Amino acid sequence: MLGHYPTGVTVVTAKEPDGTPVGMVIGSFVSVSLDPPLVAFLPGRSSTTWPRIMAGGAFCVNVLAAGQEGLCRDISAKAPDVFDRHPWRGAASGSPVLAGVAAWIDCDIADVWTLGDHYFVLGRVRDLAVEKTGVSPLVFSRGRLAPLPPRRDHDESADYTWPDWL
Image (tube, rainbow, N blue to C red; front, side):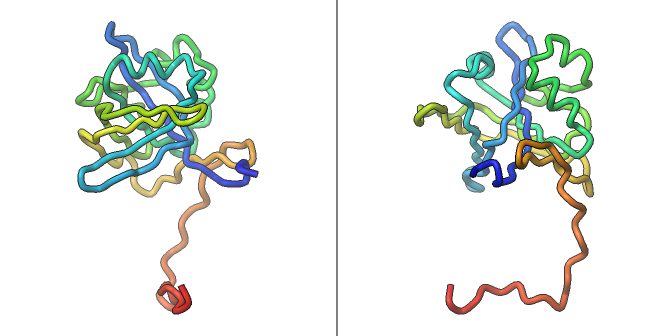
């Protein structure tokens, strides 16, 4: 059933204490608070990548754009040379900001909780930026990666107010 719920596709990146870049694809990313700015993601407890990200104490959420399906597959497959084949630069935390992403959010790990078979990772936002305006984000739905359809112009005649019964 949850496969019918589309999610954004992000790659959470970090640098291990020895400087090695690491990343994992995450669909469970969420904004938590604007003041203070906090975000979260939920890696599985069986993940072998999450402990490597946690060891660095910081992470960067890279919001993938349309056309980055190959990057997503390479990160998911844990390709050993993925950070050699896909360009990136370091954020303030040192975590990789992947080239071509729609946006990125650089964070320090604020707290981690165990929730069932996942961890809830709370990040304190250090910095963020929109890299590409007007680009469609990559989404995952029904087992497929796809770009979000282009946005149509805002319809000035439409009524966007909440109904009285809500």
